[in-house]
Image (cartoon, rainbow, N blue to C red; front, top):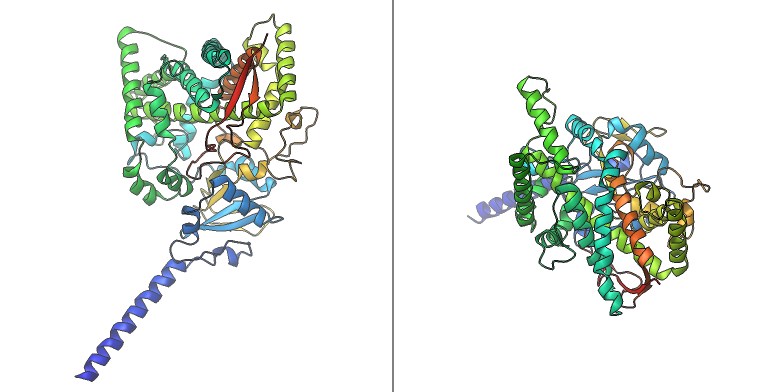
Amino acid sequence: MLELLTDSLVLTVSLLCGILSLLYYYGTRNYDFWKKQGIPYVEPKYPFIGGSLRTIFSKKPIHESQIELYNQFKGKPMVGLYAFQKPILFLRDPDMIETILTKDFSSFVNRSDTSNVKDEPLQAHLVNLADQQWKSLRAKLSPIFTSGKLKGMHPQLVECADSLVKYISDFADKSEPIEIREVMAKFTTDVIGSCAFGLNTNALNDPESEFRKMGRVIFKPTFIAKLRQLFRGSKLLIRLTNYLRDSAKSTQFFVNVLNETMSYREKNNLSRNDFVQILMELKKNDMEKQKTGQLGDDHLIIDDNVIASNALVFFAAGFETTASTLSYCLYELSIHEDIQEEAYKHIVSVLNKHGGEITYEAVKDMKYIQNVFAETLRIHSPAPGTSRMASKDYVIPGTNVFLPKGTVVSIPFYALHHDPEYFPEPEKFKPERFDSESGNIRKGTYMPFGDGPRICIGKRFAEMEMQVALVKLLLNYKFKFNPKTKTPLVYNPNSILLLPVGGIWVNLEKRK
């Protein structure tokens, strides 16, 4: 009897050991992927999850962890990583980055976070779409941001900027400090409401503005939001966390507003020069082509879901990143009052050449203001980086490094922008770096809006919006640093963007 029990125990233990061995093998089977190719890599610690636990539970903001990794492998053109079991290539070399994003774009058309539109209809927007559907939609939406369209939106931007100047006047009169980041978020909400939706969101003047409330929800820094950003290439994780997000209510709010707007315009035969109107016209054209069989199988048909998802992402991307950049710009100018004064004099000088009017052409001529924003975006990049996925097997030129189809390549904007090899004294605010005469910005090192065919489609609109706002503000106020702002800036570790803890505070002084 004892022998039977002993044999049974031995068999059970052997079976468990066999199962554990198989699991270990399965969970670590490709952990030598980068080693085989002779690429320096971060050693994956655990079966199945690699080194992901350290990333997930890090107390540091994403951009700080990125810089640590970047500096750890100084002198190396690339670094191998593992997100769970998935190999990821972290690029440090500007030439390789330029090749991936532009020269060999056809091999890296897609991001790593492309969604299944069939499962998630409201993900059918430019950020997520892949292959021919992305190409089709990009071609259709590009005319929205032509010089002619932007010039048509310019008066709306000036009107919103006038409201901004008026709003902060009370703070200046009372000598009260102002948390500029929240103010800029209200301003950009009103801009997007006007230029994209044709609506007066009144975020600046109405503390209970639903648009501003819902905007806060979208970018509320949470652990789940950070998790989704870090591992956005994992469709399983994205699906599992869909039910844990706080943004479902805000998404439905924007869908309802959009549907009401489109319905009202159709019933009353109204038309505006805005984002929604162009999407409505694209939908009408596609419906007509579909009836006559002129659309191919790989063509993305503009329907209500496509309109809703693109309007939503335009709002989300347009208000938060622009508000952050404006806030950081004013933060830097409040510290560097000499640069602020030079910017003011430049504005006055250019306006004198344009009859004193803040016209579209006048703003385009303000080269120093453009340099100020370029330097702001370098130091305070809205997004820490981007990624691309190999759409076919690929060998990196000049190397033997082989990337199988589906391999993700990570491109660290923030770390590159802070590399002293490319930007001497990287923490110093020096707009003159971007003087056209200098011409010393190396390709593949400066990409606040991305690069290549998938560069941010709203780049020119965002630049115009920020420049108009800053011109109006500097013509009317001087901005002074307020010690309520934590220095050096401390960032929320759960935010997918650079979110300063405690906000950015400034004092205002009216210009005479």
